[in-house]
Image (cartoon, rainbow, N blue to C red; front, side, top):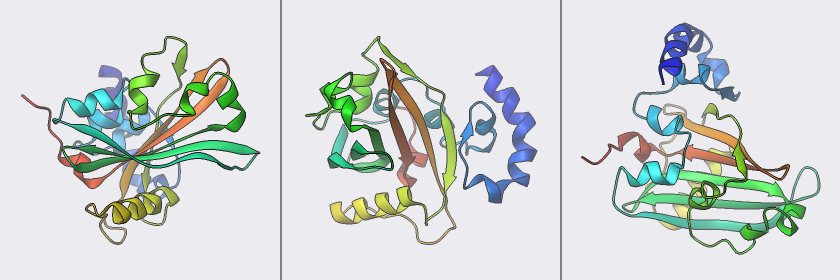
Length: 200
């Protein structure tokens, strides 16, 4: 944590200078932490299970599964899963997991029938899964992930996203590697996430 804070102080002016450019590019930790709002800092840099971190902020964590299955990808077929994480009924995170379709016959076959359990609960119980570096990014309203989250919230009848570019949302991504095959997980933090406080 001390390393993150020190890099954050040094990188703050760079973040301000490049605020317009930051929105379109993923930035690795610890340097990216300089740009993160204080209300989301602990969640965005969490290296362990995000599900466990969220449970420390509320009562019931529920997964609303939006889509799961095979689909066309840029290079062959891929398996994708999109969910909303609800904490005490409030949507706090939209998440998308992607991996090559053939991995479902190999190291990631357990995901074929994955239900409404948080993916993090499973990932962090496996000693043979290695997590890659976290990358952060601010996303504007035109980003595909933000649009997908907005559609999901509307379909579920949940509080929507603010209109326009006034409030960019923060996302993070990382790869989980098992036997040489990577699952990419992207997590978009919704407005309610900024108001979470750990329970006493």
